[in-house]
Amino acid sequence: MNNMAHRLEQYTIKRPNQVLIVKVEVEGEMDEIAIFKGFSSSLMRPTAFDPDIPVLPETTMIKSIDVVASPYNPETPHYLKQGLTWEQMESLLQELGV
Picture 1 (spheres, helix red, strand yellow):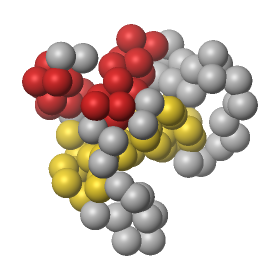
Picture 2 (cartoon, one colour):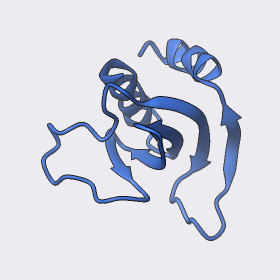
Picture 3 (cartoon, rainbow, N blue to C red):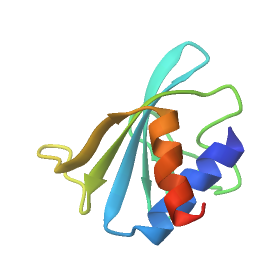
């Protein structure tokens, strides 16, 4: 999973005008992770200050990924792509070489 998380972070470094909203399941609990300019942060629970502590642990299952225009406004998000599967996102990652 950390490889997936790293690739998603690298995507946002190469696409700084985009934010990824990743809906995941971690140990039976749902979470939403925002990834922007190479950094990940949970939108539903506390995020560690230490960047070496992964926001997406190995047990994470990605449910869907939304690509949103930056700046991200949770009240009125501007979706560029919505509800992507990991397989669909992986093709975007490969296009950028990450």
